[in-house]
Image 1 (cartoon, rainbow, N blue to C red):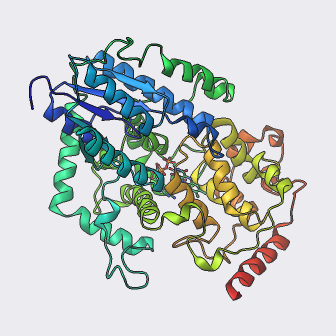
Image 2 (tube, rainbow, N blue to C red; image 1 turned 90 degrees about the vertical axis):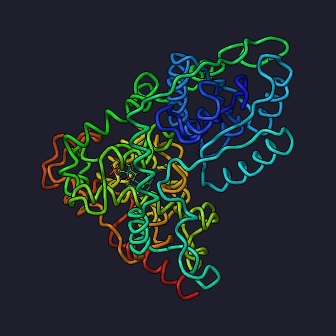
Image 3 (cartoon, protein in one colour; image 1 turned 180 degrees about the vertical axis):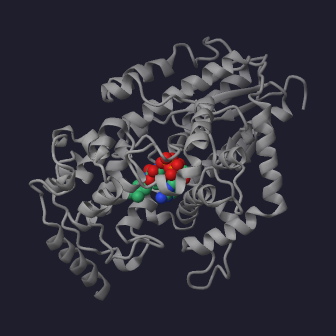
Length: 491
Ligand SMILES: Cc1cc2nc3c(=O)[nH]c(=O)nc-3n(C[C@H](O)[C@H](O)[C@H](O)COP(=O)(O)OP(=O)(O)OC[C@H]3O[C@@H](n4cnc5c(N)ncnc54)[C@H](O)[C@@H]3O)c2cc1C
């Protein structure tokens, strides 16, 4: 490569400079001379599951990333067209500018969602065939990619990929012990201690020859999106960026990790790591968490339990990769024609936290106010929607995507299909959570429920989790749910 050669890094869901594998590879080819670009496809604004709160968190993270790049001598360009429109125009324009010319490389970290895989394949041929720009892609947010976990004969029924978590985990842990993964984790640890790289190239100033970046589009998007979210999230919300994610993780490690195995089920205590919001946009990755906490399959119980939750995340990505149709339909064919009742009225009451079941309503109010919900409560409200209100899990899945800061297709779909018993390795259909006893067991002193339902503040502890003017009767609905599943099984 010549001294003047340079590269582009296409940021997508890898919003950090530290230990960013594709960016690092590009920088190794052109030291300092890599420009960042992010293209926001405006079509996302009209998706039914678009979440203004998650988008705001994403934009705030992007703003922080741009500031960090600028402080370090580089720059990030935010454009609001999809990559298929953005890159041809951008590359054509750069080619005409003498000090820039054609970039030698464009790098990005791999993604595994169906839409992203299709987009990336198209972009790779556009870069290479139409523009003669080399594509550099790297693994990033998964430690072990779905293609590395082959199982048996791909052509045999059920062959090719793991569909049950326990054998998946066993294989995943055996690969974890391989020299390849060990070397990768050492590199992850080394890159984390090296910190953020330095840059020596900025985007051209806006001009008729380079009509990009004339005004601060990112700031405009931030201001417009702030107006769409609840006030508490518009002005506050979790801190953003890699340093914030690492600091939060260290706090969790020092205070909660040793107690994780018990504390993780109690929504009133901050006993989980809350890493999901940072994992979603790549402020931190699973390999980085594993390296920072020094997790291994031989870690003692609380650490191992935490490690296994990260493996669940990898499992759901693995399923989505091998069975992309789960995005639209049940994993298990026998449940694709379940006759959900889909009452709009009951669904609305669930969304607004007005079912009369305290633990369900508290969870939904936490979600609506903060964009986050504790895992135990996610399981309870998902079971309630599908097996008590008899509403299609896809309605709940979409509502979660509209609200969650950590809304992420693979684990969200996996979690919903688990709770609705339609997924791979799901909760058996006849196991139906009783919201009252779940509340009594996991919120015994009522702290969680009282926090989100202040109107129950004075209700005595022993009655706290009893339903109050419930929309439906648990025992009756349970029978109806069993009948619904049985009839689908018999068809
Ligand atoms: C109905 C339902 C919907 C869900 N939707 C999402 C979603 O949109 N995005 C999302 O990231 N997670 C989702 N989950 C999984 C889980 O609830 C969250 O990952 C977890 O609550 C995040 O909090 P934490 O980071 O404090 O978790 P911790 O307990 O600290 O766990 C650490 C990490 O492990 C992973 N993890 C933990 N539990 C699970 C799980 N059950 N499945 C997959 N990965 C897991 C997450 O990446 C999490 O950040 C869903 C679960 C259910 C039951």
